[in-house]
Length: 239
Image (cartoon, rainbow, N blue to C red; front, side, top):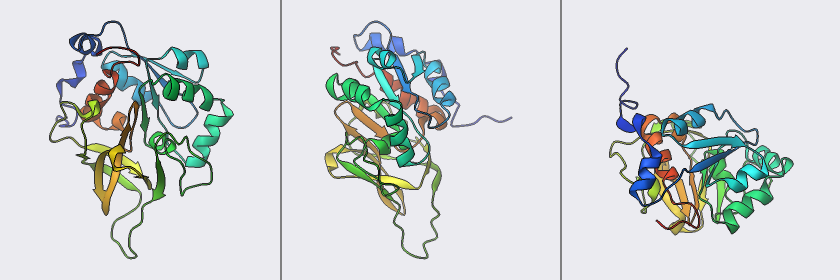
């Protein structure tokens, strides 16, 4: 079998604890992936373990409050995602950790959309951590472009962020989505992607980050991004 150019990378051997020492921090970063019943989390766990991060999948309050970083993944509908967070009693503890303690959080795919105020996909109110809404792709009648947007695509970075530190100029990321975020503030747009038109494929506001693509399906490029997310200093730490 030939080599896959997306996997053929030194990122396989990255040690996040060595990266933390490089920027002057000690100890181990603990990442909790929020388990709210929306998607298979195995690939994400495996990717984080490949960069030697301590990772736990949990919906327990004690685990969330003891985490250094949080990941809010998700595949499925907006309303079901918000309902699942509510049913598991997760919104209050997530707000405590993210909004009060300022822990770094990364929303992925549906998880990024849940950070917004609302979605055209449903009627539930979003987390409203980002001043944005989620809309269906609006393509002209007869457009040859197919929805969902599915497959490998590039991003254009719009502002400096730890997520894209040392980014490979050939980086490509894997997308599967029919809705996208529309930010009310241009300053919150981290990166964009063009699919029929340009849309925000990443957002960033203080400690709150989100990407529309799936890092766990984006091979070495996604692994680099997750490594950089893990290397963000925890809230209260001095870099």
